[in-house]
Length: 393
Image (cartoon, rainbow, N blue to C red):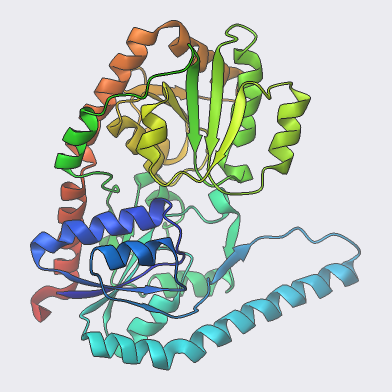
């Protein structure tokens, strides 16, 4: 079985780490992976290491951030028209790449096109042109988490997504929220596999880095943007340090930090909140932390949540989105509703009950062993691939 996987970016955030895990897990089933990428980057370096063929084509997303148009009606219409022209230009550029992409897919003799994200449609176009089966993996909540909306109208969007031979959703929440229009027979809920069984064993033997002080450390990992809730975590820290001056928050990830830094200064938290940039290996940070936070209100699944569980760390997550499918309240973590006040209350509970926090972390690791290994992930995806291809391979 030869699969052409298509990724929408090159950084090693959740979607690409999940893709690399899937490629590795599918090897035992004899699946040959080939990958299309929009440019060289972190993921191509990893593909070279594991000898996976890839090709670079500068295709673009078919989704953009939804904008609020200020000004009088005339100006708002002009701005909308500019957005429309930009969308048309992106579609034209993508279509211009199709002959080269099709030639590459034919040279690889692929059986199926696999789009690794909902934000790209080039896989749909390539599968249609080559008469190949198409599996579309939805990992994002679109408008709800990244404020993204399709370049096409809703009716066309529904029609195009329904052309996929199978759609994989990373959570029941995602499947029930943004894929309501999809034929139920095509929909499959498959949680990401985070780590192999052997990797989980190795992780359990990691010795935490010795702390320089007695600080109780919270970690928040992910792209820095409004929907990820970094501001809520910072405001919660302002309440936590009123009772526990030894608490600190480490924020990892790329993105614009100016507004958050201003908030930190305003709340006088410069000694308690620190930005540490992009972390290549999340387990290194988690291993040196006590608790991991997940503050996104519309997380599609939350790979970071499961990675924290694999590291044996309790997670405090917002009681919404796909996070509720991962955290069992007071069994392998805590869920909070509301805002910074409720989050701070949960943070204080774990600071004041460190033995319980470690027990929650141990339970989380067991949850990963039962539900979120790469082996289970790859098996579930392979079953979908077999169903789609039938006797063709």
